[in-house]
Length: 399
Image (cartoon, rainbow, N blue to C red; front, side, top):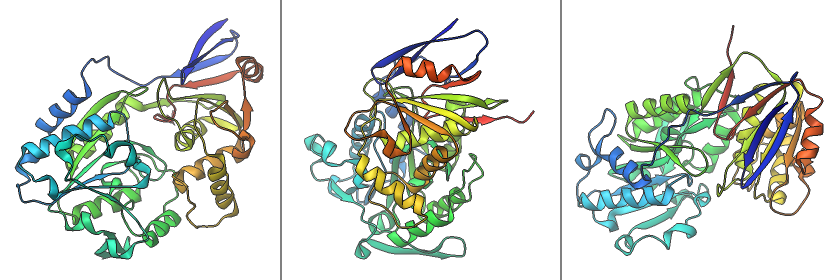
């Protein structure tokens, strides 16, 4: 018998497979490091890739827009380190605005900022507020684009975010943290309708549009985080265009894997101790598993997730009906599409999660124990296990 320990959240399920079952395990290429997050970001700021240091691009009178889409591993320490770097460069804190989304949970970190940053402005981007947007361009491929006014009018833009695989951009973050994220609601809706394909990294038309918008904004400075396992940070890369492509290469080296075959059953492990897992992470994990599972196969998601089933069910219903309206959910329609397609084409099982409600409302089946999982696996001869499937990308390599 082959024995595997499947860790997710704070739980570990131990499973035994028969000798005739082909089990392949996909692991990230993580390095063993004891470097503190604060040291990582300070080193990255001092050694940008193919670009001058940020302090050479800003002056004390500059108006700075620090742009953030969402939180990520090491988020607060990295943000404070960047703010201290800006302060040491002589920039007045009243000239700094942090532009973020409601998804960034500003209430949870603003009150914890050190007193030296009390004069910083916090702006929650509202895509429906026309007064908060300014005209940037009218382009044949993009259309008439209105973007967040604070970002357009800033003397220097600093984009702070993570790089991760994405169904539309191939790899999201950097330029795609600006467009279409901080556009008006009409542009966001139009983008969602016209960019729905599962893009391979490097081939996305949507990313080409985002790069063009970034170029029109001048020379944004990108601080890019590549997450490690659980709550760790694997890499921080700083710079502009050259650094962005370097970060994509690093992400592929760490989290992308290949296989020559598909599998009857794919087990996707999602999250480790202390890692916050929501529906977006489950959608990313099912999208990763879907890529290598046989048609009508089985996808098993093992996660301890905190889900608002009412909001998720509403968006699933909208997506299934074919409507194009934007639902009031933090999960993008592109990730929702991955979930709906996986649930329609395969059997999806999800382990127990925190919160009330029935997992069946997610178009999936519940899974409560190792016993139930062992019984499910007994019907499959070809099984794949993906560690941290919400961060990984597995592709089928042509022979």
